[in-house]
Image (cartoon, rainbow, N blue to C red; front, side, top):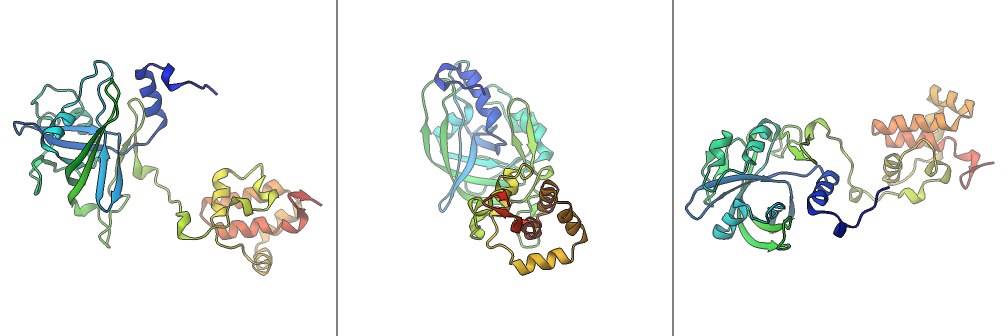
Length: 300
């Protein structure tokens, strides 16, 4: 493992390490206006949602590393204290990237990128018509994190109004995570397309899982099962009963064959296959079928 002290690395290289390691990052496509009312549009991947009551989004335009100058978005926000944060989906990612070009002051990135200016209802900056979700915000605070090149400036943006494309909503009026088709920023020139890599992980607070520490030793120390596998196993509220395990064995010819072979690795592999299909309870029944032959993680 390579270990470095942050203070001993040039800022540009440290910036690359941070962006390469922390991701994928959501993108705030920020629309502002300058003191003359001229539109500006620029993406920022130092961004997230931090509160729902009040609804607060925070993004951070950093000072340029090369010459310690500030970006037009930050300058505009400090003058007007308003911003529209537009969500970026795959259909507009190339135009979003073009808008990141450092055009001269007063140049309209909406025009340069071919995106459509849509008047907002409550703030001066325009919305991006092509964006699937647009947040009209008032800026409640700007928090500088430093004065040197690379220092961020946290822009606390309180959401006043949300606009959502009906095409991304499901039958309940919620945002469909596949339909919204978001993209996220990675390191270098890389992006991630969310809906091609979506997978679901049940939240632990939706049930009181037994925890990995309660998994029997011979399962917890398996050479087959991964940390993710153990996490799924530990997120179950209670183990199946011995009767449920016996019934499962009696009705499962494949499992009986594995048990008769005495191959524990094969047994764990079968459980792992079930976990990949989210059949956690069945995976537990497979693993517990072999428990009587173990004591404290060791075979008798």
